[in-house]
Image (cartoon, rainbow, N blue to C red):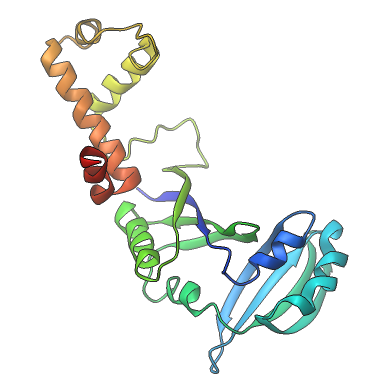
Length: 225
């Protein structure tokens, strides 16, 4: 099943981050980016009405920007085409010929690049995360869902039906509350299995969720740190 992930590449050295920090909205929407033959990048961006004057005033202070062309105003804000010198690591990590995943929306913020992307599966998502690691770009997962258009549908992320049911009962029953309102024995009775079997079922379900979110390498680190 396809998944949608919201991610943040938190790096103040990324192109346009300094400019975004100066804006009232602290955000520059990114429509698309094209690599030019000379290694520069042509990026189509937009800012809201409140940020327009500050954006245009701060352009000259941004060393990575070599040219700006105003496209015009729409209901979504003011659009510009900006030629950027640099940022190759960022764009290399997002090579559409190499990375599975389709961009839904993107914005440069005061922290870095925030993206909403749809991936064919978790392995495709991991490809982007690993590529960012290779290029030294900090990668932070903000949100992930298997079907954001249908929030009523459950997000199992590889859980079996038994694992999903066990976690749901444990959560609703207060197993994860502090102090705990449901014991392992109580959970086992709800599931119709022994207490050791219930404990093992939860452990495998928790491991699956953690590894799906962080990846297997990060999961192993949580066990050894």
